[in-house]
Length: 235
Picture: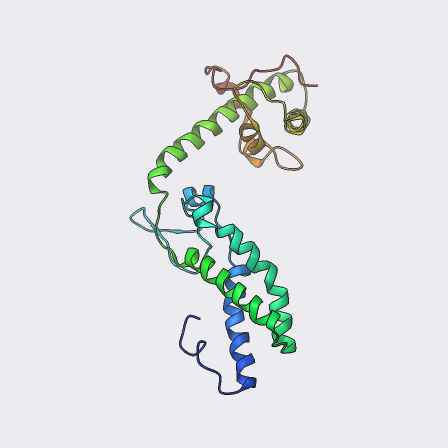
């Protein structure tokens, strides 16, 4: 679809299936092979190259971009899911040359899905620029508060003689319990606690290499009005 050769009119049936196969490869590249950008990734410019002047290059064909439009207007994920569901059927039909009314209908659907999603791929605008500064500031404040909270949990355990690994395990179990039960302190929600752990342990931000006990002790002197209550004892 991106050059005249792929959109040529087939001269016979054999060439028809060749053209359809070539077009299908473009469709699959867009619908299946590209990463799908989240709002957070768009705000952090994860998929875009940083230029010497500090700006970011938003070249086409590297990611299915996130746009700051409402779901009803964008519908990116809706057409992406629909197109991906059609991929196995379309590929099999081309391999077996099944030119049926069903194939014609499904081919039209997948081409529509491809066109909708490709618009997100070729879009090089940055419509979240106005949101980025405030979002980054909020993220930094949130992470700083989480580090402070972890410090208040970790230091008492270590001072009681627990090895660092065992203290981390206790904290993981405590946070995992909060997330499993869905019961959070007033003023805090799942979104605040979820980034602290992965499925098995505390995230690497809080390991011994990245978060030294000396740093933690320094955080204990800071105000605690921006962190959840500290339990008297972690089970």
